[in-house]
Image (tube, rainbow, N blue to C red; front, side, top):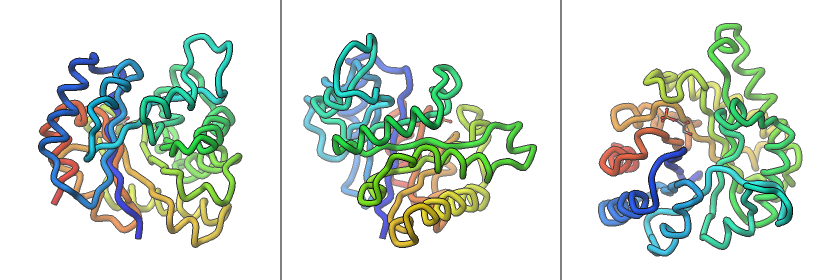
Length: 248
Ligand code: 13P
């Protein structure tokens, strides 16, 4: 059985005090649930959130550099993320691929480095609207999945989380249908099985992301292949995120 995982990607939002306030609300309102809940605040708020000692919410970062330390101005290492309590790190988000020119090779290096430090990578894959219209969705996610997992060892792959985020559904209010996302996620799982075997692939958690809201979360969570969600905008408001995590 795969434990569902719902993560909030706050992107470039929230000051330290706003982050602390939101996390306090989540901690007090969330019931014990079978869902693993993760928040990924900006780097600047991680240490203050870690200091809250949250028990219902785990901490993740939104990016990481693939070196232990050194002359990489502006970057953050896995050592630093561990130091502030991060158990997860989002890697290869489409915004990083688009604005910061991250490619599969870089994502692979980052994923391997995160795993070396026991940080679980949430690796994002997903097609653009043009790729979808051209019928290339499966081809794109298969190639991104293979690329990102290129340096992952067989004994590490079950610590990887994949987030299928169709780019056209991010921040647009448009979503994939549950059936459609389920099919693409099935393709991603088959790709992992090809690389690491059926048994391991059956343990890897794969999320859907893209305009997930309290109103549509259950459509995705009820699908057999979908193990959770990566939530952007709706993770910034305590009530929305709580309703998503406690979907019926
Ligand atoms: P939205 O939920 O705002 O569409 O963002 C999705 C996303 O990019 C999460 O990583």
